[in-house]
Image 1 (tube, helix red, strand yellow):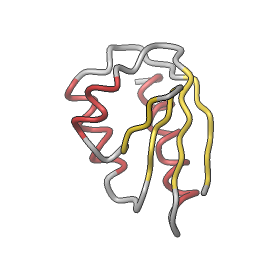
Image 2 (tube, one colour):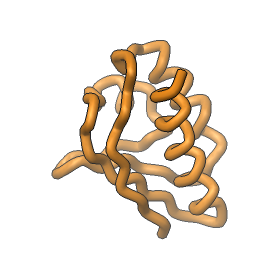
Image 3 (cartoon, one colour):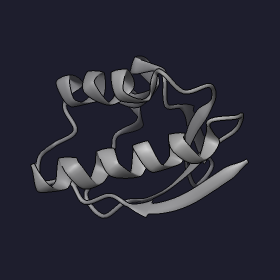
Length: 86
């Protein structure tokens, strides 16, 4: 399992549209989760991502498992970095 802690840097609210882009971006990976405190969601679930309530500066942990775990964690990290600079 590969994990990475991220501090979310969002210039805009994490809208339903952003959530849909996010899910389509990570949907190609085998298994990827986002964890914040006691809460853990499947990053490939649109409902889970929308209901997560991402906030500016929030600390989350990204965890992936499987043959593509490193690539999945890197892709998720890049997504948040690119959304911060968009």
